[in-house]
Image (cartoon, rainbow, N blue to C red; front, top):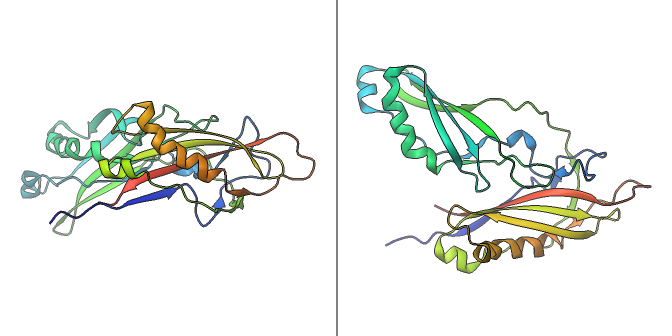
Length: 242
């Protein structure tokens, strides 16, 4: 009997706290509710098989995987850099699984995906007699601001569109939320990206519930004397349980 995959959401929040500074959130410095330290790091890794011939020889290797993070979270324009010409078997093992990896997508001040290359370092090693695989990544240059509350209430969680769940489609939705000094939502611009489709009509099925839900959230009022809107970048992952 085939088990039915159940949909679930991952919203870019942790315990209702955003990583934001009091001075952030203007037109040029939006508040990012996804920790920028995560940008370019893997959110889902399918581990490759350790090549059997390499196990027999107790061969180790390091392969750097380099690519551009797309809006859907997958890597494009991927290159593999093994530490030696003798490591081709390890490259072949990675080529089987890297298309299934997911990364946290770097975003710009418009809250939309920004083209940026990232590098993950995959080590094939032995721990005692056991072959092991470790995935690390280069440390981001930016620092993380201290946690401060920004979202004070979430009345609604975006629904997973039934039609998309039945098709087995996943997506990532990026939103730019405009908030007035009182903490009220003025406008929301959401854009969905999916490896399943690029059709605007179908992607709108993911965008509509995000815009509806984020508009109901309650945000911390701006400091006294603040004029003009603040902007927050909020991304939502639509995933299916495996």
